[in-house]
Amino acid sequence: MIEEHIKQIEQKLGVNKVLIGEKVKERYEHIWEMDKPLCAKAVVFPSTTQDVSDILTICHKYHQPIVVHGGLTNLTGSTETNADELVICMEKMNVIEELDVSSRTITVQSGVILESIHQEVEKEDLLFPINFGAEGSAQIGGVIATNAGGLRVLRYGMTRNLVLGLEVVMADGTIISSMKKIIKDNSGYDLKQFFIGSEGTLGVITKAVLRLQQKPKSRNSAFVAINDFNKVIAFLKFIDSGLAGTLSGYELLWERNFKAMTNPSTNISKPLPYGYKYYVLIESLGSDYLQDQQRLESLLEEALMDELILDAALPQSVQHTELFWRIREDVDILVSQCNNVQNFDVSLPVSEIGTYVDAIFNILNKIPEIDNFFAHGHVADGNIHFLISKSNNSTELIDKINNIIYTPLTGLGGSVSAEHGIGIHKKPYLKFCRSIAEIQLMQLLKTTMDSRGILNRNKILDHFK
Image (cartoon, rainbow, N blue to C red; front, top):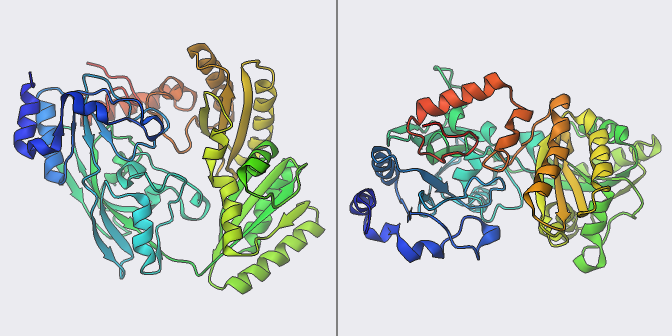
């Protein structure tokens, strides 16, 4: 028997936009678990903001908890569901509404794929800087809801720095729309910031106005080898100063990552010999390829002479550059070498990264159930990712590894989540990087903006009835 509120949603949207019964099991909750049937009361496919408003108005009236599904690339359980929840799937809200070249903005519905935005703006020699491995699946609503970072945060900032306007539907169905294209607006509270990074717990994002940049005319990269972490930091300062604001990427790989990504089975040749502790991949975005290349080569020569770096390699073609970046970006290669993989995404002061990772590696090496582990990250903004391979997925082992990674962060002033969010999986560890007062304020915002606790219930914070 169909519940009354599901019937009302069908009447508002049409039965073709609602899945119930066995059809729900044809869906899934994560792109890495597509063979696992979705467990939910129903799946609803809005195609307009008014559809979303109608759904939430009804769900609020009936105290029906909902989970928002975007591209399903989240790594902290934010899209996990249970049988009592209703899924709002945003994939039909996939229209790019306007590309305004004069104001350098693009207006999009929340279900637009990130890669589609990149392709659309590139036609006008523009750039939307947010870029990461899941760009072909991630939807912009989810990108905003998780305040995604990626490979160019050093130069352009996180997602929140690139959102000018936002349209959101509140838990009771109220539409909050501020689709402005302006950069400066000090007319009271910046309400959109409540929703950016809230992981769908305060409202459902339906549209956004995104800030664009002029597309750089050149892209130059290099791999360098270093053995001392202090020189990783020193070289960052040196190259950033020398490139005069054009440095856009400074990615760090430990040797075990570099070896795993360039072993014979990957068909990716190593640009530098093995045997160094750190491998740094840099990127500059500029205006003249040859001049920018010459400047980069000159800086690398100077760094070699001053022994800031021990070796360096430059790509010889565009295709070669892409291979360089595969070594950093193609995380699937690392995942394929892991069993029961456990992912981490932490941040801490840049000066502490070398000592912190060394200590973590030493501990992991002593745990029999761990058979492999990798570390890499956006070191310029203090963000390190771990992938840990282990013999089993027992709760005890997962908790043990979580505590190894997270416990030191409190004393270092770090965070258990640099980019991925909190979701369900990191919720017990929020206290490692947020004070009691901060968590209480988050709880107050949640209960004020979603009094019945229907939006992504129990994500980030526990639901209190």
